Length: 132
Image (cartoon, rainbow, N blue to C red; front, top):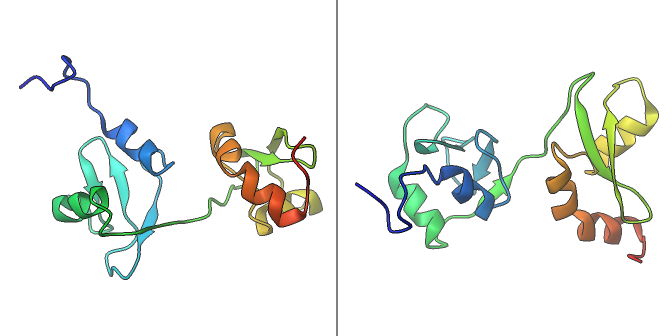
C-alpha cells in the first residue's frame, strides 16, 4: 500500500524526530511500568520487545508524556556540548577529565550536534549565559 506522500519510505525516523529523539534512543513514558521505550523502524517498542500500538497512538494524541533519558557517553565516545558563546562543540569523552565530567553531570552532554542545538536555550539559561 502506498502512503499519501506517494512513496513507500518508512517514516519512523521522522516520527521520532517529532519528540527530538533518534531511532533506538531510549526514553521513559510517565507512569508506565514497561520503561524504557524506544522508536524503531517497526514502531514504538517497550522494554519487553513488544510493539505498543495503543501507546503510540496515545503519544500522537498527547495523552502520554515522554520523559527523555539523559545520554551517558563512554570513554572515547564523541559528544556535543554548548559552550558559553552559544556555539556547539564536539569533544571525545574521557571519564577522567574534569571538563567532561562537568559537562555530563550538568546535563550538557549530547549524542549529536542537533541534540545540542535543540537544548541550547535551556543550557544557556541554566548557566546564565547570554545568547549573542
